[in-house]
Amino acid sequence: MSNWVRVAPLDEIPKLGARVVRTQAGNNEHVDIGVFRTEDDRIFAINNTCPHKGGPLSQGIVYGDKVACPLHSWKISLGDGKAEEPDVGETACFKTKVEDGIVYLEIKK
Image (cartoon, rainbow, N blue to C red):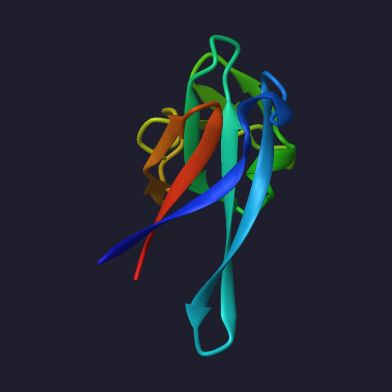
């Protein structure tokens, strides 16, 4: 079962920027998801934690369809969450959609 959660109007997520959505994961834990906007207005969502040392990806530099982690510059694909070679690792991806100028994020329950 899934649930679409309203994130923000598209215009409130800056180009080459991100917003963080905090979700409940159970056992009073939460997961932070980075919702990214590329320069050409594509929207991606990945776990906000870098697979290397846990850096906050939403604070990284977005270029093309990648984000560079602010801690050690690992390049993470926004499309599949995988680290760019030679680095190895990946983070979870989430589905997004834009309807009537509003960005939505799919949360699985």
